[in-house]
Amino acid sequence: MGIWATQVTPRIVAAGGEDDAVRTLRARACHGLRGQVVELGFGSGHNVGLYPPEVTRIVAVEPSDVAWELGAARRARSSIPIVRGDLDGQWLSLEDASADAVLSTFTLCTIPDVHRALLEVRRVLRPGGALHFLEHGVAPEEGVQRWQRLIEPVQKKVFDGCHLTRRIDELIEESGLVIEDVERAYAPMPKVMRPWVFGYLGRAVRPARDVVALDD
Image (tube, rainbow, N blue to C red):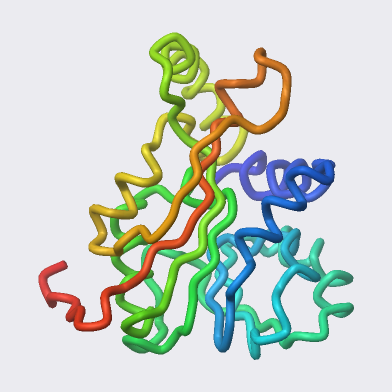
């Protein structure tokens, strides 16, 4: 990882302004969280203040020391304990079935081996526990998809591996999680922004009788 990825990108993301519409979507992704929650890609803590009171602890998975430090003030204001866990969502040190829920907002686009990360999510979730997600990904129209494929190489360089063409719902289902509900829509922004703002908002559950195979 170069200086841009380690020093610049976390600051751009942390400083990026979010309007009320995005904040509302984040709140909806957090709705229903309870108990011990693993948050993938905690960043500088944009979701702090949106966790329901039923949440008892946040285990933050965040690789960037810069982002973690930038979120110090937000964490200090949180009424819910937040501890830094692993640095890599692809390899979690948490025990099997130890999390009541997992939260991922604008994170699955960036993880290099997203398949591995989602298998880890399934493993650490207790049976019946849910992944709450708010992600951007591939758009439904071929015209927008062409722009996404064209722009993606630059996007990945500027934003530390961020993909524009991942099919978020399909990736989640491939991990063995069962999507209970999902909304797919463009954020209310100008059409020129469509390659970046097709969103997936929903919940996916680890089946109650699920057993994660050792060869996953």
